[in-house]
Image: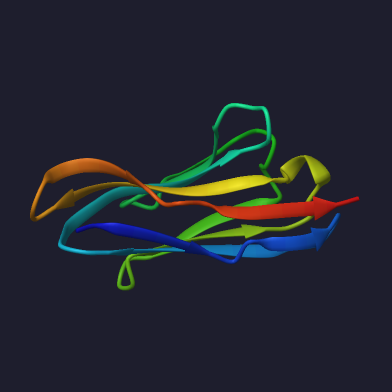
Length: 120
């Protein structure tokens, strides 16, 4: 069974930094892309950043220049380095993976989320 486990969330002051991690485990054949999404209270879930198996990255305009997504394919882990955090970055951050499993073929998976709170 494929699982995505996020870590690294917490409380930080505006201007500070946090690093999120998401490790994928299970019977994985290949990972096509991974990404981070976030959902603030009362708002819809939105894309933050994605990275493909070829290391092509994509960012939301609101985080460009402040956040960096990276991956370690040997560890099936994706990271999100968040710098210059703003109160509007406060949200639950969800890890997403587009991968092929030995059991179920190609599917999209989500983590349970990690809360990031930025105080002003």
